[in-house]
Image (cartoon, rainbow over all chains, first blue to last red; front, side, top):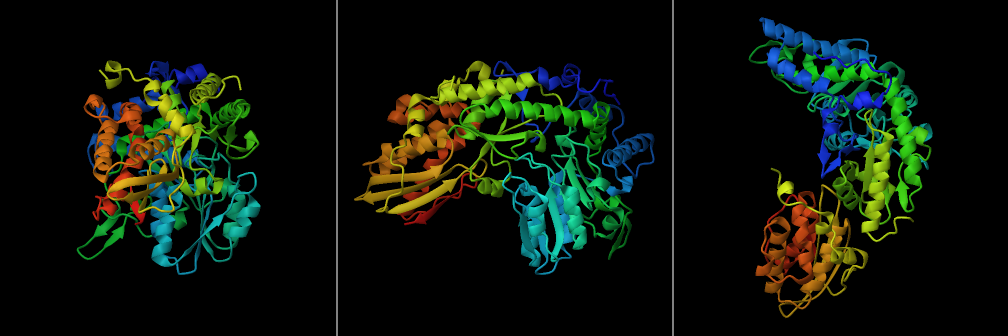
Length: 419
Length: 167
């Protein structure tokens, strides 16, 4: 296993040197990758980990009695322990590997949803990604449960007051995004967890955009379940995490049935394996989980506080520079210190797809569209937005490139560059 | 060797003046009160949407109007379409739709074999694969409307869902 080199907090040149993709050009320009909320790039240590696993250790885990199986099992289970420590979990048994955040949330919707009665309330927010909305819509259709939504306040944030209005004594499940993938706003999860506990509801947090960017601690957040993805935090695609309190996970029925997740199987029935294996049916994504361990090691070496500070600096710089462009609207909290490393925007009357196509010709990768949050787009009153999102390898000069690219887009659509 | 290194693609291929002009000053924007058939469609992947109303008189397109929201390519494609089709026979209109869709999807489409007028400005879209659906949207909606006017069913295109709204 390759370890991340020792580095002072955010020596950006040293960090960038470890991401081989940042050396490539796109349409003859250096890549400026500002689509980190969609997925992040991978450091050499993660890429090497994949190669190393397949070159030296590849075996199926848990049941094997030979050396390779033993090594692969130890490496795979070692990452479970790493994840537990990364999020402050009490035990590695509380960490379930899935394919992605979406699967983690579906697992919860399926298993928790089976217990709901007509009239029970599932509380979400106006800012949910489709992954934390559609599974609950399916549950509501199946059970007669009712969806309720925490609306955004005037500053386009989920705040304690707006949450209080939506969480009633009928709430059985509260499932809320921690950091919005569009607004960048940070939900006061700890306070909302208390409200959920007060009415006896199960509290779930979608940490897909928070676990990569700020230190998350499941105890401090006071949640019952948390979901996030490896690929948004330097790790490979195909690995998601579901964390849950041990007694709650133990109480849930399995989601998928098959090998690995059983204890005793007869023709008629089966008993379940101990946590967390009860929720990991079939051969898991062994190689990618092991490489996810290298990603966590990388983030730990940098330090999540340093990552958060770097993100905050870059976001503040981006918001400041973008705000000075005439005709540029930014969505989300007005104060940059209240947002994570996501800046969704529209510029002039140029559609975000045109913005993205024009920026791409300069090597700048941004996202455009509804960001898997169509209801939020309707709430904001826009059909789509462009979105720049940052991570630990981005630099101020890349924000400058974005500004230049936007001015060029304006020019192409007939606006004066100096304006 | 990538396709691009053989045939360098320039933004000017996509954003022709004619396209930007139709985006800025759309023709026939607004739906027709006297429409024979109306249809709509959208691109689920990006949210572009087009509503189209078509008035048909004596086997010919007597008027068109469109509404909707989206990028410059989707909206200018619709605007150019309404201008190009006015007064054409239904058969001509359907043939033109076929040609434009071929042009939008095939980088090597022979423009000399057809006469598409201003619509030829859309030929550059084929060099930008992710934008092809933007250009196609209005034409898929047209196909749906004209098929309905002829009493036919259009095959469901799940990538760009369209439906008749009245007619």
